[in-house]
Image (cartoon, rainbow, N blue to C red; front, side):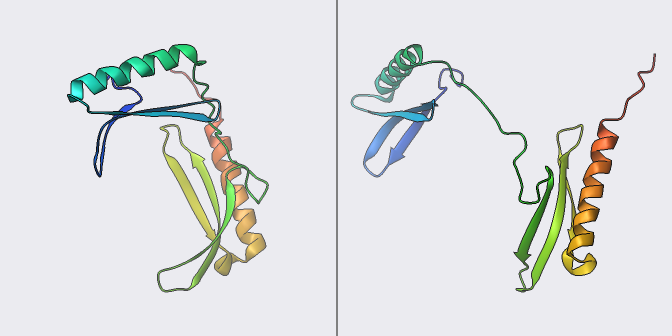
Length: 143
């Protein structure tokens, strides 16, 4: 049943009990509610029929994910953060960020208070460059 319920969820809120069908195409959200008039099964079949009719009418989904967001530093993977700790003290730092070969996001932080703004930035940039160079190195295939 899980495969059939793509874009359909059970919705119960206040006095409404039924199904919600929702999807997005070209920036526009298509949403419709189907109340349980007689039984859940009847309203679910109506929701699935509407969903299938709309999906045939509309273009296929276009999925575009921005892999790298632009930062204020001008370098991909290096950003400046000025946060406060739980104690209320400032913790400005530069963060180098990358994704390793297993898909895990990794970060390394360089404190502005410890290194100074220019040195912390340079360390973050150098860290990012070294990691990217390591990941792009030619690998030997044994065999």
